[in-house]
Length: 114
Image 1: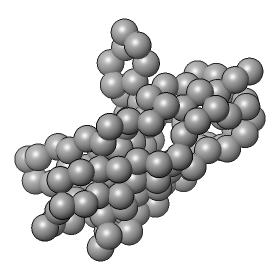
Image 2 (image 1 turned 30 degrees about the vertical axis):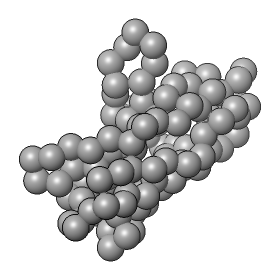
Image 3 (image 1 turned 120 degrees about the vertical axis):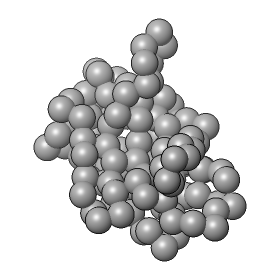
């Protein structure tokens, strides 16, 4: 199973960013897909997820600024963050959960300049 992320890069504060992730090599549909963020020396933290019922969960730091969407049949998940802040900087990892298994993509760097 591979999770391939795209998007990311250098963005100015106040701008928007769209991250996309597509899974391959699966014979199942993920129960939950979403995004996590990690900075050097820090733990990987939740940004936003969506389960198979369409229920979303978002970190307090992005609430009101994010949109997450999935195509369950294709095992894809997209994340848009508006009103970017320097503290949104980090490596963003795509995540998929199926039953007791957790899968991670390689990560894509997002840098928000002030």
